Every structure is written in structure tokens, then in C-alpha cells.
Length: 310
Image (tube, rainbow, N blue to C red; front, side, top):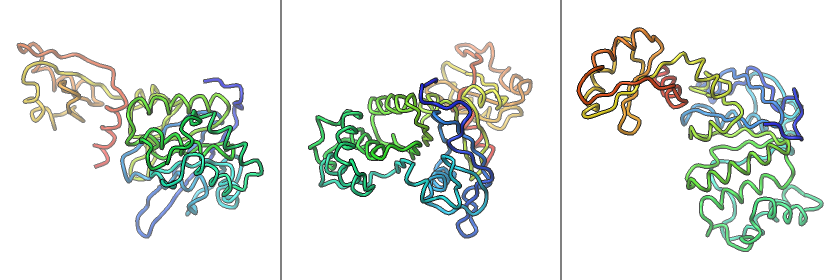
């Protein structure tokens, strides 16, 4: 991606050793993240992995227990209030007034930000995000996709330099998800930096780079291709009649790090290729059973990482 507004080499987020504890629980464990300006990064991990806590530290809503760095060139420890004014943060939960219209919600948010040109900002944002025709509709009557678009509009009113989006597409239909990502990439092309947490592998593949967090630790980082290559994973697919019966046979065999179904096909993955091939060799040549190798995908990699962390 090469938007005209992007500054080559400059970092929107540059933190090292980011750490947060809640009592005895280590929620975020010394994470390093460096996100260049104008890029779209995917932040992945299962529920409870520390994604939301990390996002809240980056935008100044949570105090950092350990670590250092900058967000938009501002110190995450001493300049948290200044960071808040330059970041758009979209939470997992819809948090607007359902008995107000889209326009009324945005006008209220503009007043909260004390924007001197609030009315003009609302007009421009309604136009920018395709909300003009629905501006009089009550927020409580909107579908999940339109609620999401209104929430994004509210995040954009104060012209942030960085968007932090926490599971923004949860519970919306596929078309709304696709429309949302088109908007995100259009904003990125204008120079905006985006860090978005998601559970959806197809959304992760739309990002410039991804970071995967597990039990508070950053366990993988890079482009999709880099993360898959770094995993060292090989994956074979078994298809045909009665392949479901083979799952229990293969689980736990030497070389099989993970075996599970993707649709009607049985995926068998492992890092020790020779041992993995030995494990599936007895199934080659069986009547009505096809065995083939497939490039591992993100889901293969992330399932394996979760299995190893158990």
C-alpha cells in the first residue's frame, strides 16, 4: 500500500516491553510493537489474550506498569492525555445513545471534543462515511453494520492520526464487514494508521502486517506470508469417505502437532515434516481416500500456536 499521505520510515507506534498487571495476573507481558505510519496492522489472539488491554495502554486509557515508548511521537507514560486527543478508539461494545439519531450522536461527540467547527465536522463525516441519507435514523434502530459505521464516524470527527479498533466487525454481516474494510483502506491511503483487533482470518489477510498475542505474549509478527513461513509448518489434507474416523487415530501420533476438520476435509499439520509424512503414510493408497499437501494458512498456524500454549 502506498498512499500519498504516508511518511516512509516514521513510526506511529513504537513501544518496547509494554506490560500490564491486574493483581497477580500478568495480562500483557513485555510486548514490543513498531507500527509504521499509514499502515494497517491486524492484532490477533483468542479472547483474554491481552489485545484490549494493550490497545487501552496505547491510547492512554490504562497506565503502563512497565515498558516505554511512544504513540504518535508522544511518550506513553507522561503524555497519555495528549495521545488521547490524537487517537480514535472504537470499542468492542456499541456505546452511543440509542434514542438519538446518527446526526445527534455525532453532534454530541463533537461537543465532547470541543471542536470549534463541530457542525462542519459532522457534515463532512456524514458525507465521508456515507451516512447522509440515514442521519435522522435513531441509533437504536440501526443494524450492526450501520452501528459500526456510525461508531467509526464518531472516531473520525476530531481528525485522529491513529485508529485503534477493538473487534469492530464482531456481529456484523459479511457485506458490512467488506464495506468496513474498504473504508479502512481508503483512510489508510490518506495517511491514517490503523491497528485493528480481529478474530477473522480473512480480515487479517487484508492487513499490511499482523501481530499475534497469546497469554499476554507476542508470539508472531510480520506479513501474513512471513508469519506462515516462520511457523515451519507443513499441512496435509485427507479427503473422502469416512475420513472423520481417522481423526482420533492421528491425534497424538509422532509428527502430528494438530489434526482437525476444515469443512469435510481433515487437515493434519506439524513442524517435523518427515515424522508427519510417516504418520499419514498408512492412509495413502486407501480406496476412496485422497491425500494431498496444501500450503498452511493463517488458521493452521494460529490453531497450532494455541495448542502449543495449552
